[in-house]
Length: 105
Image 1: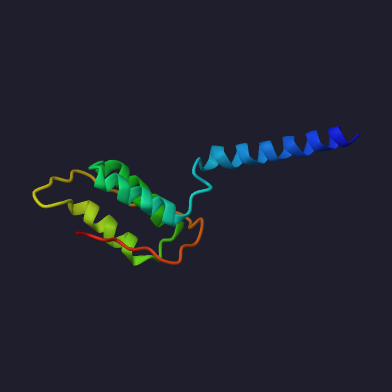
Image 2: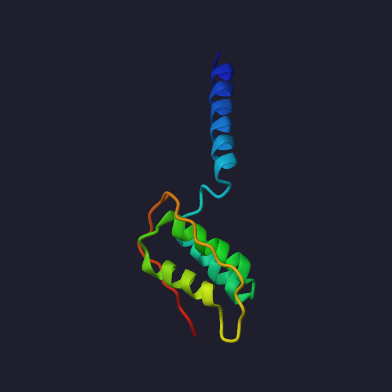
């Protein structure tokens, strides 16, 4: 009887995590994790991944002004860059973040 109960609980948890993952594959990331991912991608020169990660960070905590500054920079790009398209989609916040900073230098 205990094994059957344990199997039921494990199946329920598996279905719960599968449902979360299908809606948001990075449901376990915080806004800070996305921002660190964006900074790493930017240092490697992968501007597209940096922008996608910054947009996810902004989605998780839209009231953070540093994320907005980073997205504004993505719209203009570095000096002598040509930016053809940059979109920001407002979505429901998913988490909270205490600090968020963009460091240039």
